[in-house]
Image (cartoon, rainbow, N blue to C red; front, side, top):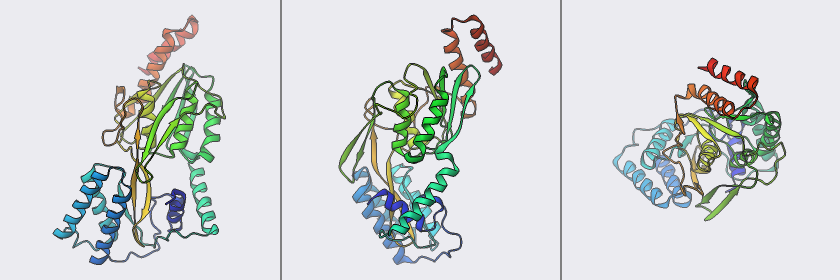
Length: 354
């Protein structure tokens, strides 16, 4: 099942901007669910887990937990679609400790896979409009005192729109002496965009990570690009990544890779712990679920950050991370500075932050 087609299905279901988990159309009226619907949704969840969930043994454990809940009557009093979806999500996450697993209810019926060209065009336009509203994830780019570059990334948007914006940002920051990338409110995004951004931070192709897709039984090798459309930042200048508990999914992907190959220093709090990739799947006319079907494999650790998050190199409260990163960058720059006047300015800035 193609991810773009699934995204289109969600957009046509009345989901704002094509987002997989946006709110359903408020005009539609919820329909009470009965025992037959509950059984059918559970059966569909089990089929999707058995076919695609990244760990087959974990899928089997979740299958048994779902069966036990049905048999015990744990869901018998649940007749509201939203309440049922929340109960299912809680059970799946409690059993697997996988924060990407989610079941959602939509009052307006979710279309089947059969979409015509007009429907596809509607989805593409809706998603593009939504991505533009948030600048494909780049919230701010600026130069901080001491000639330190700063990027505030809220997500890694679709490559078509994100790539030229990343190029423009990196061109603007090309003359800075160190770079701070703020991922504290970065909730995820497109893995191809993560790879495109990381490519600016290396001088040659670098093995960033691999992804094993269980549903396709293949391993995708992921290396940074030999060429980038903007000015390459390179790997000699220091890079600092700011993290928090809200740093999640694709944003953790960047943090985990750059930490383990020693390209960046992570400053802040432990990240959210969502490593598995996947996509939404239709369960029936009113229910869908997100099924994680891929897992990253880091070439250094040979594992990932699922459930544990990415631990920072420097652990501080997230709201203090920017100041701590600036001081670290300024101290490193001052230590190697030969211009006495500029060195004094760097040291003055350190004192101001403190």
